[in-house]
Amino acid sequence: MKVYIKFISIVYLKSLLFVFMIMTSLVFILNLLSELEFFKNEQVDISFTLFLSLINSPIQVFELFPFIMLVTIQLFFIKIFENKEIDIFKYSGLKNSSILGILSILTLITGFFIITIFYNLSSNMKNIYLELKSVYTNDGKYLAVITKNGLWIKDKIDKKIIITNSSNIQGNYLIRNFITEFDENFNVIRNIQSDKIDISKKEWKIIEPRIYQKNNYINSDKINFNTNFDLDRIRSLYSNLSALDIFELLELRKNYLKLNYSIIDINLHLLKIASYPIVLLLISIFAALIMLNIKQIKSSTFKISIGLFFSVIIYYLSNFSYVLGSTERISLIFSILIPIILLSTINCLMLYRVNEK
Image 1 (tube, one colour):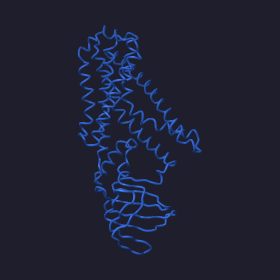
Image 2 (cartoon, one colour; image 1 turned 180 degrees about the vertical axis):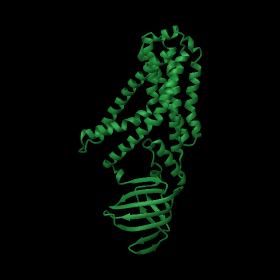
Image 3 (cartoon, helix red, strand yellow; image 1 turned 90 degrees about the horizontal axis):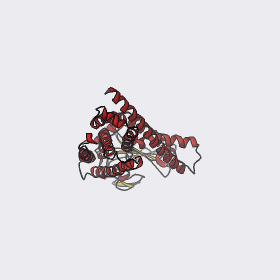
Image 4 (cartoon, rainbow, N blue to C red; image 1 turned 45 degrees about the vertical axis):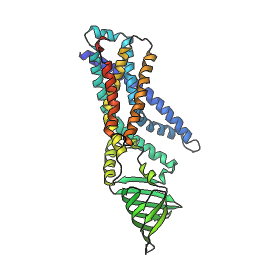
């Protein structure tokens, strides 16, 4: 049995590495074309675009691992079918269910490696990518982050730099706010303190502001304040959660809770990562069962096409389920469980008499 485990592990790892390199190369090429288009009017060295394309690729490959795993398992079976090793296994008493068991363990190990090592490295590279590219966008002028000290916003309007700190968000309002306006040389123009700011539009309505300017103190009922931020823009601050590793996501979640901010998207992202090993396991079993059920078909391309066809359907159903969860139509846990239940049901139906295939 140990010989079989070693042989299956080697063929599996070779197949995984081959598919991984192919998919990574395709993603890199597509990223490079995108970066070349983005920088076509900028004076940047080609090595810079190559570097950006390289560090942006891993997090995109992470999203493709269900497809990578499916093709890996299909390629594994194509190899053992073509070399008649599947017949040697059968004559030696190694059942198909045993092969599935070995592949399942290997897939689980791969899945845990992906979420603990690969994802965290990829997200950090994505963060570096965004920081480097922000130099060539307006993102450096406009910045908003959430920390344990509340919401911080950096804005630039009419050659003035504006720093806003708010302790909380309630509905359309920022709560307990302190705004500092600077000129281009970072000399303080004025400070504004307010318990409540209406941010439903980019023209903020600062309610009962207390204004400190040139040693003068002014009270007012309400003032309008032009910014580049409204509630929708602030709510989309971390639409790119993939740039945060697991520890940063957990820290962000804690800060969101303190700020009374919605943590639905963060919870969904964390649950998707946590469920990844199980999803990859079910995808692997699904791919293996497809190959065992259609092994009499000689065309390798046709075999892989069938698997990809069903996996695309599962992918879109999964995304639809995640959307329902993120919009609170169904619970987040259930939105994660739907693709798992679907794959498990399909696999159970195909497992019937698997050792006779």
